[in-house]
Length: 246
Image (tube, rainbow, N blue to C red):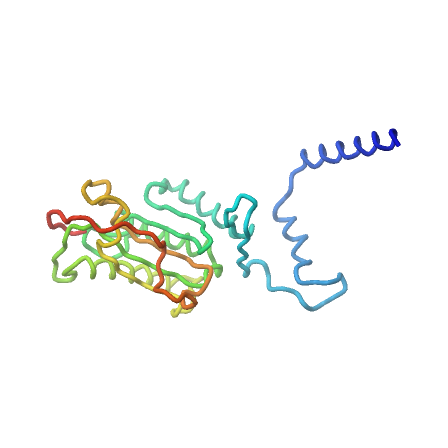
């Protein structure tokens, strides 16, 4: 028994060493396991689940964090690599959450001050995001936000109109992409200056408050009993300063 135990221990150690030194090719691994989901035997021809590219699976990790399946993680990494390659890390914030892909874009990348027409660079970013997600998202919620300095123009009398027009510009552009959803899956909301994320008392804080937030949700927004929002917690609005286009 002692000899057998020594041999079993050595075999186990050898196996662990081989596994630790090996590398897994993700593409080949996914191809290998794609045959099995939904089957109860190798000979069964039916009961096959839809392709993994059309499934969004949220699971609870050992650390208590919500993560998505491997495919969505790869899409997220592709998007982060694009932003780093283009030097847009300071202008675009991307978070992969249990609700969906949450994107925050500062207005300096999106619009001219006081306007709601998309700039060329913002269109490139939106095309990249829409292309990476493909058909993974089931609904898209777009929020427009401004700082608290009033605007008074013939086209946009208040920040409400400006923030709403900016949100609708993004929705209209996304509807024209190849990976577009049904129009009923889009929501555009203008919050004006009433949901700041930083203090409006500093230029840096106002710059962060002038933003567009987009949630590419894994679920249809109609399933919610409350109005759709990209993020649940927002700060209170702060005192206004001198008038200027947001």
